[in-house]
Length: 377
Image (cartoon, rainbow, N blue to C red; front, side, top):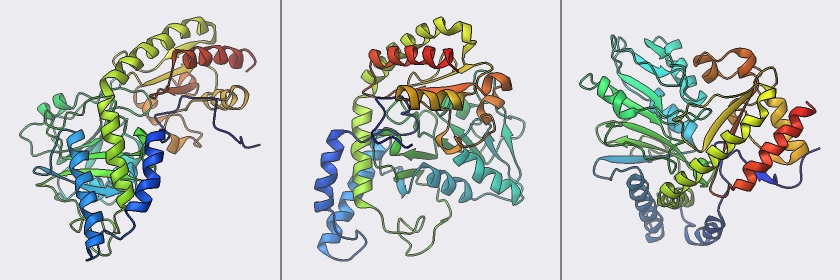
């Protein structure tokens, strides 16, 4: 039977963050305000078009950039942004492209598609703590990395990665879906060329994303039609979605430092509480330096998907088992496999991810619920 209400405790913010009350109020106003196709020729269309241009400048400011050095391509989400960046990347048939093994499927799938079509490239391995191991013998034309891993919260040192390939004519693509509004994005320090974002992860509209592109880069379009967005992505731009994305990004970035401190305290409370579950062979799979809003834990010999379902059905607590896009797969996480986590442990993994409303009471309730669920597993 499907639930008729939302979970009592929501701890799956890495999958998606619900709208805030403030944004819900803005939606009503924006639907009355932005009613015209922004690509038309009337003064009303110009009003919508200016709202999109303003939203672009505001989103760029949130990542430390400006319209002078980069532009925004509005997409249907982070998946399309990554597909556009990888499928649309232009390079010679002899040039290699590299992608880290711990990337989200939205990055790995288009990467594998290019390899299937004959583009030379390689998947870069991960160290046990989730850090990518670069291949400095064959510097790539395109290097695709995640800033914050969506399952373990492992943070890639993007500035250090850029330093290692500096002067190699390498284009750096970064998936920042899990870091926007959670930790500073080193746009300048890492000289990022292509940056994929998702509004869903920060409480914005769930079907809006963005690819930020440096001015000297222009991915080949993957959607053809009317030639909107400088010919790089055809289709009418969603004025309301773009404005709401910029609103959500500004709110998230303004609250980022305080929220990070809050999540550090809550993450420590979770880790301390897990010690009493040692008899269930509990292990923390996130590295100590992980982003504090994501913690992956595992119970060796158990099934994480079963634990997740029992928490939802019996305790009204929602956690994740990794990427929401692959939750129905019977395979173990490709990220944990790349980190050399044993299969019996990886199968028992669940992900706890925190958001702005998360409290110490939520963490304590999860710990108590886990003990009850595991006792009757």
